[in-house]
Length: 358
Image (cartoon, rainbow, N blue to C red; front, side):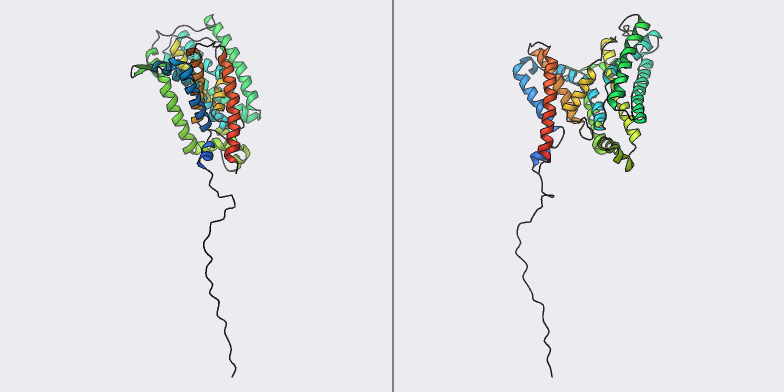
């Protein structure tokens, strides 16, 4: 009789647990680097630095009324900087934004005054005109494929000439007539240019509108499908179209948002001063774009936030009024802004490289 031997499997002991190996792809980056990756962090730190600087360099800044004035100056820039920033995230920019503000104000003023109509008729028509200008810019961009620089530069020149020529033709002057005694003026002024008191300090209503628009824009960017579309078309419009993003609608609507911002700021100027100078607005488009760039938006599109331009506009308002409160020559304002813009671009570049470095 033969015997067969059956082998039994060897029972081994599991290896002792050791530290988990990482190939670097799943490594958690430090919190500081993750914060630096946010587009608004750099400008926030810059805004704090500018504020602290002027608190020491210009003691009047410490007064509540002075700070309210700074916030007011910031809001008039910031309201327009928000839609301009959204447009830049979408990969485009608008050189006609500054003169479009004046076009809106001129339309509302002259239409109401010359036709002796209720001021709200002029306000509504001005809104339609501003939205139409934005839609035209977006439509021409999409249909021709031309860069937004060329399209909006043409619109800028057209509006600049039309503002001056039509105002002289209608009023015989370079400014519109005073509309403060017209029907509906008081109600419109309350909406666009009123003042309220907080702790004994007078605050302009534009500050409230500015912060409200910023909160709404942030929600749109981070919590809605439309916000995803903006980032998608700014990153790569062909890839966005391939996955079903309505590129044409998104581009045109972003230009129309800039038109809405131009209308709102134009109405504020009109109801603050009761009249409008037709030659104003030139150069303001660069301020709006600079506030967005300082706020972390890239000219190449696909990157940015709505909060960053808020701090960018605040820096502009702080510098503009801080120089006055410090008793310096106001001619240095533009030079200071140029330094801020170049510094912000370099800091944003360094932040992005640092944040993405493994």
